[in-house]
Length: 314
Ligand code: DON
Image (cartoon, rainbow, N blue to C red):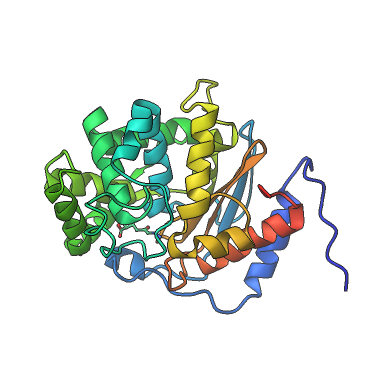
């Protein structure tokens, strides 16, 4: 049996590819389970599915529930990383590393023998450091992030969900432990309760596949925002994409790179963003997760996308 012939990577529309992917996903049994450690997320039907592709000029194609807002969770960490890098540049890397951790996203185990410096900005410990730095730089992490996402997506209603943030706060002992532990090494500048409040609200941002695919567009445009201004230098955009590729799906980053071949960032809400530099950005959502916290159908859909289109960084 021969492989399906890939449409040209300069195809004028991604819609037929998205329709094919959605049809394949609909007939795939076994979708994993929604995150249950945040009660507000536990009740979402794991079979829901949406996917969007945004071209560099802001044209968006979608399939399924691509306009349905969902809990962005750790996807927001790609944006906070970019917002901090744009403001303080290399200084950030004195506070957080950029190596894959090989451990679960909420692990504490490496922090003590690495002196309170988290392995990378996407595990929870590293994301807390990034949020802490953005808080020091702006005085309002969530407001800064929300304004950025609204501007890039063109969605003025995009906001966070107090009930998800409260639910996570009520079950946030592990994140509190990480924050206090890093504070004991002097690697957190803000009071831990302030940091945690900002972090939980950041994670609770609700956005759709269309919103997030558009908002990530600067990563495909080598740092250029929707209005033509620069958020990042070309080199910094490369850096964020590189960290997404190597660390964006935690201890599954190797498998994600093998299957999908794109920089990606997942969240326990079931969303994943992915970047084809110089070409387009994607966001897929399906709330059923695998044991490493990545969307089962989401990874499968991105895997299928790069197979069908031939688009990849490799
Ligand atoms: O810190 C947490 O536990 C969550 N708010 C975010 C975790 C997350 O999305 C990890 N991603 N796969």
